[in-house]
Amino acid sequence: MFDVVNISVSKQRLTTKDFDHQLDIRLRCLVTEACSFPVGSVERQSVFSEIFRLVMQSKKLWRESSPYYADALQEMWEYCFLKLDDPENGYKPDVCRVTTWLDNRLKKILRRYRDRSRRQLNRYAFAIQFDTGQTLDPIDNLIAPPDSQFALDMLTHLLNWVNEDPDQILRNRVCAKYPKINAQVLLLRRLPPREQSWTDIAAELGADKTYIAQWYSRYCNPFLRDWGRVHGYLDS
Image (cartoon, rainbow, N blue to C red; front, side):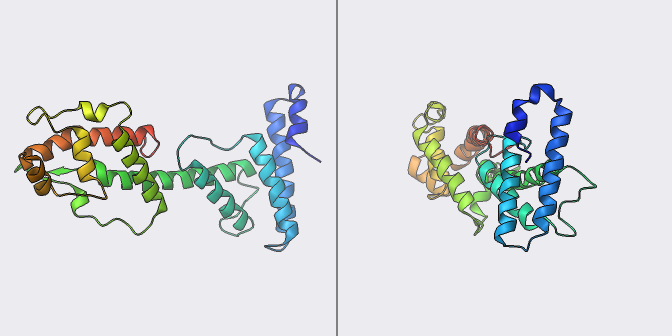
């Protein structure tokens, strides 16, 4: 039986092209075998397990360090195993290799996760400033989507960072006009669960509402965007 581990031992005698070709032949045979068994059968699941093992050992799938990669990978496998012999979305041997089909689906799912995380973070990171100087943050007007453990996990991650401020970059970004106000102070009041209005924040801190709203837009939003990029929620 074909085995990636066994082939890797003799890989010095194989070109990369030969190795990829032998892997694809074996995977195509397994796909054909899997499709010959009823959906949900023990036999079909057993063949799926072999496909999974060979593909993961081959390291042919796209890899990245984003926080949602593991979820996307699991979703890809579930989708592809379900759709393996689907007339429209299933694997078509005349179109591409098995690993290419899996990899393309994984990248498509990752794009969806990335877009969703961008929309979630943008809800906190972007403000709309009008000609009058009034600043309106979308957080005042948007209701959080009912979705989402994903959104809650991301928000928890963000709030932990704001509270801990491990590098003290938020505490050190001090408002020149109001020295007791810094980026951390405003972020903790603007982000959920507090979500205070600028009117309430201004009254609490004894500051001009328009001034601190504009200051937030100028200094706090970039911190949020940078955090999102560093942790994989936004594109670099």
